[in-house]
Image (cartoon, rainbow, N blue to C red; front, side, top):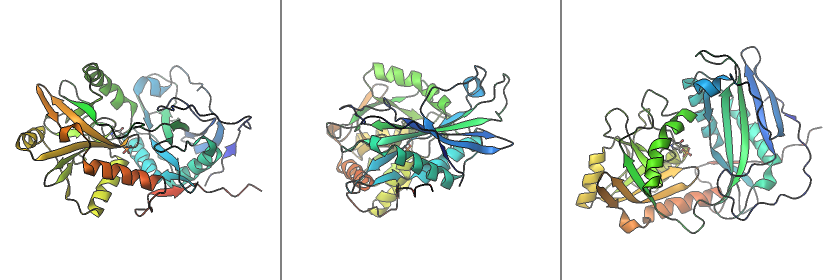
Length: 361
Ligand SMILES: *Cc1c(COP(=O)(O)O)cnc(C)c1O
């Protein structure tokens, strides 16, 4: 484990969190940062005040998009402990994104330790109301300053923290989603399974068109045949039929959601018939006609479970479960939230405790 140097300014005054936190609007005082070069590997492990970046205008990430990020959460439990939700999975996924983008990988255990130190230092920023959390955003950028497409040699990794509000302050509310085939988000064998900025840039126009028509998000189809259901672009998707629950197989265009993996594990544990397979849009539309379709929901770190009340595809409107969340959606949401806040035992071993570090001698 590399030593982390602390260059923090001592905090003066109490942290006053606003009543409505929103998402990603405020940031804690300090960040973790480290640099990579081929000669030194990862070095300069530092916890220091959040500040603007000093980057050369020719920095490669700006021009050629060599960048990636992660998103996870820390919670304060009912026993006043601080926990991280599945951080190893998130750093493993960061490494998968890094390999695809020809960026350096990190030591997962070392990163989890660094994150614990940062979160411990910033623990007073963790909001405590139900549904609130400390959102954790690690990201990496290629920092060589030179024009011409090639992989950057030098990189920077930063972890910043943001207290976030409850996704559903007024209770679990279903969302309206547009199934879009004028645009695609990501293509298999491309970078669809990486959390890399380009995928989100590619999704903005389709999402903006959906938003103008009153939809919250877009359900993307596969980019090759425009036939198979993929994901929502910030959430993975589950379809609850009368006789089975299905989530699309990870064929390369879909992000490997940690919440998705957690939901699959829970459904198996509940003895539900969960199948991971490719699913065509026509199967969904037919199931709606024949009454085989019960509900559709998204899974992701931000909302945990997001019930879909309405789906639109061209001139077809599907109202799911009378526009109300299904019992399964409510159960999954409550159970994951109960585990994250320590109200129910962590029987899947998903939590990593942030313990008081031994004081430096
Ligand atoms: C982050 C993300 C998800 C959800 O992943 P979680 O690990 O569950 O938060 C799903 N799809 C895309 C495209 C994402 O970026």
